[in-house]
Amino acid sequence: MTESLTIRRPDDWHVHLRDDEMMRGVVPYTARQFARAIVMPNLSPPVTTTEAARVYRERIRAAVPAGVAFEPLMTAYLTDATDGADLARGKAEGVLTAAKLYPANATTNSAHGVTDIDKLSGVFAAMENSGLVLCVHGEVTASDVDVFDREAVFIDRHLTRIVQEFPGLKVVLEHITTSEGVAFVEGAGRNVAGTITPQHLHINRNAMFAGGMRPHAYCLPVAKREQHRLALRKAATSGSGRFFLGTDSAPHAKEAKESACGCAGIFNAPFALESYVQAFEEEGALGSFEQFASLAGPAFYGLPVNEDTVTLERVSVDVSETLDIGGTSVVPFHAGEKLSWRLSA
Ligand code: NCD
Ligand code: ZN
Image 1 (cartoon, rainbow, N blue to C red):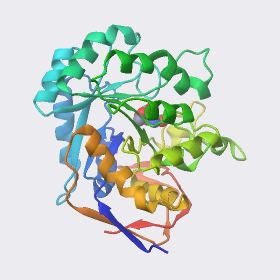
Image 2: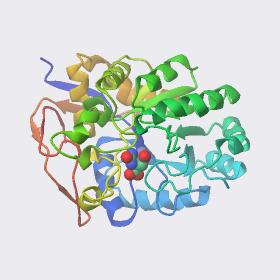
Image 3: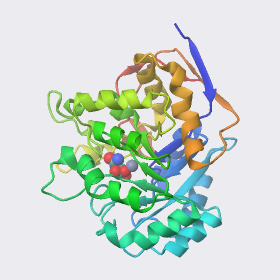
Image 4: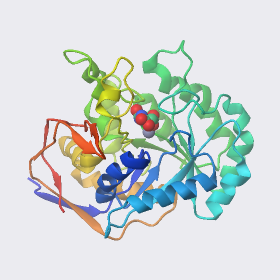
């Protein structure tokens, strides 16, 4: 049995670091595990310009513990009013790495999202020319579409066309949750990739209803049927360079989730690598973990791989029921469970 696994230090290609006290509480968890992270812009109000991303990056950097090397990679939130020239400048100045497409009202703080994707052609062209990656929350928001079908319908109605019309645009279909998402990425060109979260490798939709309503298993896109979870495991462990790690760690206060209208989001940053590696081990695929966690993402983004390494050891870890994040109680993913791997200090 493998007792320890050493790989190049991974990056997190999708994380919510929030702001203020919550940010200062969660940044150390992400910075401990990852060298870089693509930081989501869905603050309130959202980060929509190069200038806003520049100052948000400074706030994040100030929250990184002394002696820890961590680089936030910034994104701008696309709206109906986005200026493509500002995004291109942000990329050229080394501030922006990607821009994020949230269809309006798809999820937490997405009220400002894009109402008509067809009107973004000029912005997509500017991104294509400047090499700025498009990160996509791939769900339609039409209320007549079943919540479990929203990813597949988004691919059919929008994504297929965006990818065809802008063949040079790098597109990440984020936090894929369906076999349709996997098939779309596999069938697309080299400019298209997908990220996969730890929760979607571990839970299917039953987890939200196990003996009662389980708000801490609720995130967006919602977990789907078991057949989809298995397709995601196959994709993640395939060794393909087109699927890579993106935690979608999304902390919310415990009471904001345990509510009549609970927030979507799972806080997995404290044990993200431990959670992923357990899924890879269950699939007999420890050998492809480095590709998924540390190599495929930089290759897609055109960035160097990290030079230092991390080691995961086979040690049983108890995940606490709650964590105090800057004075707020937050329930982590795997709360109350035992994990069988631990990231070495
Ligand atoms: C995210 C959040 O809380 O910011 N929630 C989630 O369930 N993933 C928003 C998002 O990325 O969809
Ligand atoms: Zn997210």
